[in-house]
Amino acid sequence: MGTLSDSLSDPAKRKQVIEEAQRTVDAEVSEKSGLSGMAIKAAYSMAKGVAPGIMTKILDVLAPEFLDALQPYYDEAKQKGVDLRAMLQNRSAEAANALLAITDKRAAAESGGVLKSGYSKLRPSAQKHVEAAVPRLADLITKIAS
Image (cartoon, rainbow, N blue to C red; front, side):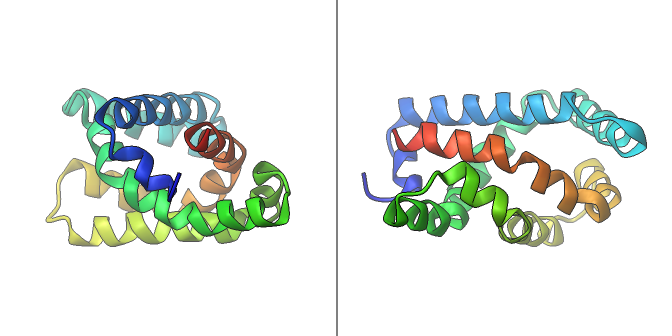
């Protein structure tokens, strides 16, 4: 296999990756607690209610960029013969920043609406939530690469 995003070139594999990514996001959201967790769950539910299938569409659009952003970590883990999950957990802030740079750029390009509004409200706490998702992201990357 070339790059992680190469796995998206086969339509059947892409569909499988996006479905798995959707399950990963759903699991992360469902485990959130506290006030910020309630806000995330509400925004997620609202986005899905306003535009059914929107999360799958967003993941489909962002997947290549996300995989490209995580490629260096995957390559380094493979080169060093270390577990990707452990490596990403040790560098969770760095990995989260790489992913959030993508969503920040996309959000800045949006003209407005419910998704942009929701994103701007949740963005201040996004770093900690993306960092918390790193173990599942590592598992997803490992699954994609196999």
